[in-house]
Image (cartoon, rainbow, N blue to C red; front, side, top):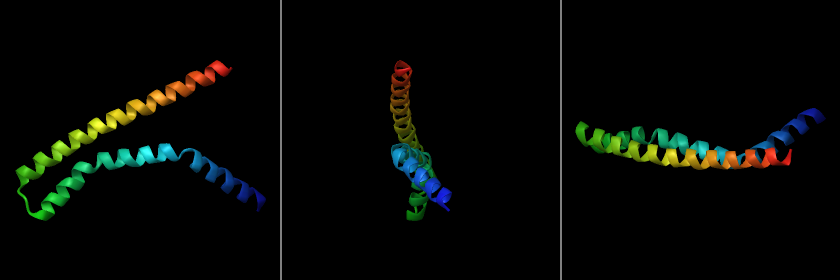
Length: 89
């Protein structure tokens, strides 16, 4: 029984420590489906197909640009921590 509690405790600490990565992952998923969400909302409002396609593509391009900047900043942070860890050794 104590093993289960210690496992739960370690899992909760891990989730707490990786909260930023989880949030970034949620944003990336939201950005990846933003074009579909936009198309669904615009279709529900009754617009025609050409306008739906145009707006959805524009939204998706903006989401790809945001995702790129998120990836770049995330990997720069990871490279900085890797360099610090290698200097400690």
